[in-house]
Length: 237
Image (spheres, helix red, strand yellow):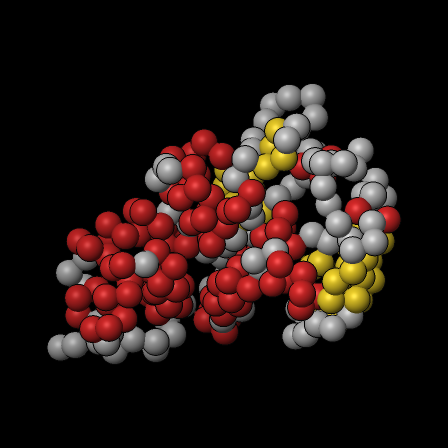
């Protein structure tokens, strides 16, 4: 696999379609790490709860500082296939996770910089279709994913982690629920008397009730407030 550094206006040639002999090869024997927004989109595409999705399709793992991370569970077949791939392509294509959506472009930690990832088997780079990175992001519907990834990185990169050696026990469960099990967190928000004491504008409460993406953004803020001790919310006496 080779890499090339790009900016927003850098150009590259790439196209993926069923006419390529390598079509769906990248959907086998691969580790696909899911971000919270991926789980939200995928469970809705399948019409199941986040809890059912996590049990059936993912493997929970622990990352740096013990943070919960989620790995998509491959099928137990010869090719170790993604559970959503067929010979015709992805069955949840409109809600596919960000690693599948972004390829061959990967955002770096440095703002405005990207990597062009080239798998040796991929014939897409031989196609004549030309893109800028900005055009590719728009065409692949990446911008909402990048917005939510940025919000999530504010959690994982918080200075609050400096006082935590290892996340475990109840805080680990809270983090996992808030960030990945959005349906259970929705019930927590509905039932918790403590949350009603937070000073949150009424219009934001309304958005949280009506929109799961807004609920997930609130979940990120809740983790930073309740687990990492950031003074994001005020408490009404």
